[in-house]
Image (cartoon, rainbow, N blue to C red):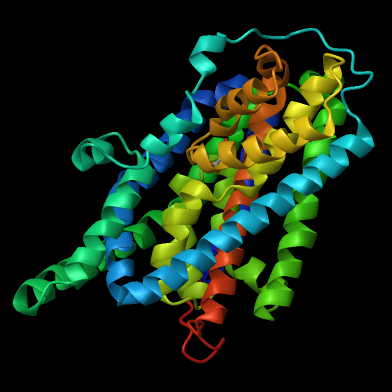
Length: 419
Ligand code: ASP
């Protein structure tokens, strides 16, 4: 290829390439329809496989080296507390936004709905809240890694990091170097995988566009709109306000810095699969120190899901409205609490939020068949809520980094690698 053209192409930033991928995916999904599926499926799946390949080794090395970097247990405790406080506060804010909107718009009041699908309720049941707590502590960390169970891996790595930092002499140096070096390699691999993001999102978007018809929006339109308004509100008002008030930073700059991760979250519908990119953007573009991001982000990708929390609340209230069941204030409070727990327990994978709905519905005695009703529009909502989830993780990381004085000054020691 002509040298000049090559130089010109190299100048186009990755975010722009991803937008081009999304645009071409949309066009080919609309105009080529099902015939694009064989190509789109392979391209999208290959990208997802690459991302999934790196998740477990990345979490294993990042959390352990993160805990080692934080130093003593006092610092770890403070950081853990801040992280949990932010995650709880932002998720609650999201749920209350959803609750307000669903009561205001009442999308289920006069909805003309016939149950479009009737999922096997048993397969959607996820067990009790006690099971959820039990799932945090692995009985076998290796099997958790094999099965990509993120929460138990995080728990094990925190313990591992704490006890490595308590060793003395050469053992401590050896293991610390091992985890730091391992993390560095995983981030380099991530950086390599990111280069395929435009192709990957092209495949994913083309597949979704070719397989999703517009007719599904007819009866669920108002419900869909309520969730979308809620997510947009949280995305563009609540979270930016938190950045302005708590970190005194410019949310638009942060949005731009995180754009590659946010677009990937949107197209993959998976916070976990996006995690490598979220970490890369947070460290290399937003200037957040490795010490903070390697601890806060993997935790956030698993437990902090604002978009999912908001969606759980709106969906449960919508189902109640369709069935004509009036939920008392106490019952609505139960919806808020269980929506929070369901979002914490949901895995960062596509449609996890839909599966967790059963916890909320069971808690207030709503029929599980309601899940079948909202299934049709879940794919698109999943994309939006996943991007909200990742955006909230990144906002929290910025706020915590700022409070810990772990944020690089833009333009000075901040490295910019994508552009
Ligand atoms: N797909 C979402 C995520 O990975 C979870 C959900 O289904 O709500 O963050």
